[in-house]
Image (cartoon, rainbow, N blue to C red):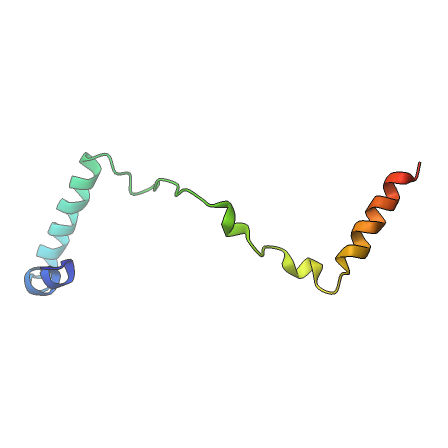
Length: 77
């Protein structure tokens, strides 16, 4: 039985008060296990999430000319 099936068959038929009590029991149980609902654990990030970030800055820029210009600046005092 999936969680959705369990909810539809067992939880949904309960009264609002009973469902609220069930929700409180579940939350209390999670808190006892050390789960902090207010501050979820930060998820690991991937460097690949930055792919394409800021690409609009380079639209219409000749990258080779830009790099050559930077290299020319190195030779200037």
